Amino acid sequence: MDMHFGFSYVGFIYLVMLFLPNLFWTKNQPKEYEKYAPNENKILVVLERIGEVLVSGLSLIFTNFNINTWSNWAWWLVVSFILMVLYEIYWVRYFRSAKTMKDFYSSLLGVPVAGATLPVAAFMLLAVYGKNIPLGIASVILGIGHIGIHLMHKKEISA
Image (cartoon, rainbow, N blue to C red):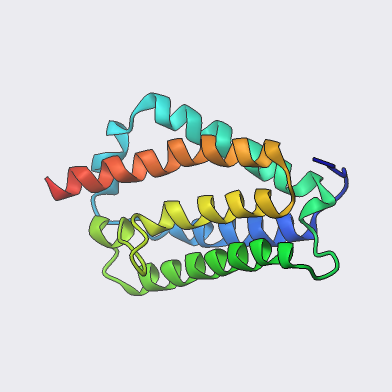
């Protein structure tokens, strides 16, 4: 594991792809979201917040994530980026929907709770591509919190 400190433009692009739809979401939250938000498991919320901070910071400070010369290892980055594109497609579909809780916690191409799962998986694969254990660990922490919260909400609305 050879980590190189410096600015990652790939990490920056991923964070823009992550945060931009979330900014629009603040004005387009699902109907009745405020009814479910207070029920979130506090431990999962803490893990989600820690994961968000770590993933955001770590994805920016290692040049390992930037595009290097092509090798078969670069397929990790390609698949990771495809997951981020699918995440954007998820958001387009959500913003065009009736914006219900069911729409927000929907799957995409068989990926459950796609709004949470796709970016976490993308950052995990980015960590593999960059051979960066800290980002991998941060992605797991984020995944436990973020996906966990989404699964709980999905279960609540299905009950």
